Image (cartoon, rainbow, N blue to C red; front, side, top):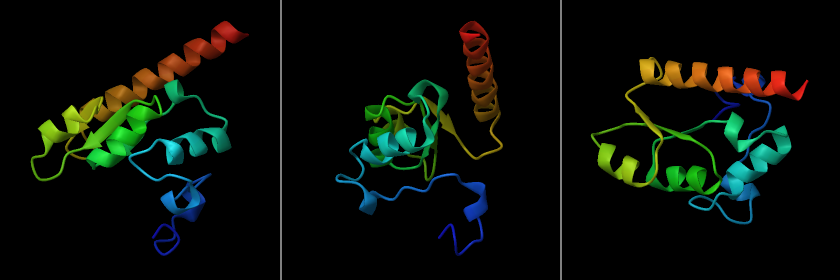
Length: 112
């Protein structure tokens, strides 16, 4: 779908469940992406709209932003979502991104 929509250039890595030994709800797709990107779970966000995806992100040790569809707030929260948003313009999302950026900057400064 990403290539069909012409979005390939916007992603450094694309991982599908078929490429992993175990697909969601296991954390394997997220753990593989972290490894390929040489990224830390603490410096990453998972975006999901399904319970199995949220469980996979939580199992990978990553904060999960759940996009709420059809009034499923409780099931997404019960699965471990860190933040619930209505859409990608939700202020809670932008606050979380700013907080993540500050965290990465602070850690980078202490490493120098």
